[in-house]
Image (cartoon, rainbow, N blue to C red; front, side, top):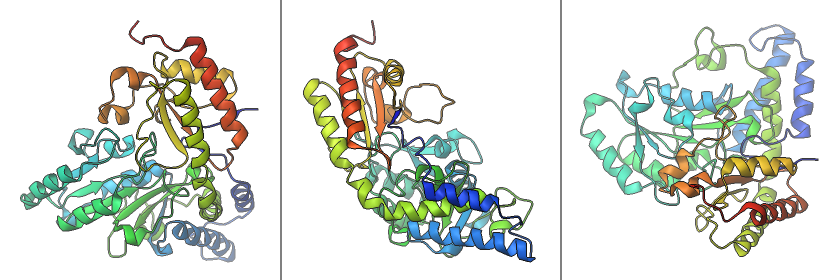
Amino acid sequence: MTVYLDHNATTPVRPVAAEAVAAALGVTGNPSSVHGAGRAARRLVEDARERVAALVGARAEDVIFTSGGTEANNLALANAPKGGAEGPVFASAVEHISVLDGTPMNQDDVIRIDVDEDGLIDLAALDMQLKDALKRPEAGRALVSVMLANNETGVIQPVADVAALAADNDALFHCDAVQAAGKLEIDFKALGCHMMSLSAHKIGGPAGVGALIVAPGHKATAAIRGGGQERSRRGGTENLAGIAGFGAAAEAAKADIARLQGLGVLRDRMEAAILQARPEVTVFAKGRERLATTSCLTMPGVSSETQVMAFDLDGIAVSAGSACSSGKVAESHVLTAMGADEDAIKSAIRISLGWTTTEEEIDQFTAAWKALNARVGGGSLAA
């Protein structure tokens, strides 16, 4: 049986979510229809909307259902700033690629904000960039996009501080909370976001459904048109089964946050054992606040691809960076932005825990890591 330690890529579907999907598949009716069957379908959508909103402390009416986190990020960045002009878009250099490539223009139009060696955003640099943008009102209102927690390292960004800087400089603020939801207590209003992205399959729901939360008073312009669904903010018939599963997963994930945070004990024990076995290992952002479920570390001299394949042969699923690269192992833009050296980048893997993770699984991975290191570690990637 596979030891699954790739929860940041996707986490197993929770039983309550699977049951909700199955039940919704038995409902015949378009949520936009006014007859009884349509109203029954609509009730499922609105019940899920309430549950998803509750996960992040938002209002149900501010939830726009999408096809996933990528579409939610794209929808956030596609919204026209005030005055109708396309304003500058600022994003941290460690954002998900759906943000860095997600503007309606092209990736060169996203102004990247530097991060430090742990992947934390440079607030002073952002402040300077925003003040410079404010001097050029003809360019339109700026939009800042900074994730709450990084998908590769788990490092948690000072989002409230970013929101305050955005407000001081009359900029909009979008937060990608895809990895943080269900792992941290989130209060949408308190964070000061205009928009926040979520994804169902990161919290135990089905793949193919997500949401963009939009603050009261902030008008969201539809990127997908052709219907009045989602209060005319996202056209197309709603994914009824997916949305129902999302709602069930959101409720279960919210109740499970404390337990997932407790997995940090297992994560830290694993890292300590690996560092004891090989002190020159780099654990990225180790001294910073991270998601309790995420570890990104190196095996010096052994490529990420070799490790992923070797662990797979041992029945253990881990990853090298993000899982959004068509199944290929590519160098991490996150670690590159953090200034990591080439050998560290090429030997880094991500271990991500989740709601199914057990102590025995962590012990099995740790033993497998030590065995692989003893077998092939200590070489040179340049050789």
